[in-house]
Image: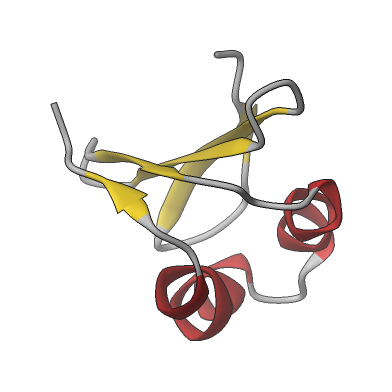
Length: 70
């Protein structure tokens, strides 16, 4: 999945697959997490957030199921 770079101290990049509604988030330490059944607006809001790290921590991590890291 192609990911967009994010200007954040927490997140390095994020990508979204509208076919599967999967959001991938790569943290600055290199770990990648895949979140399931994420509406497209959440990806757009993450990219537009004043603080992507805060939006990720307060909303995405607490709302959507995450696949285990491979």
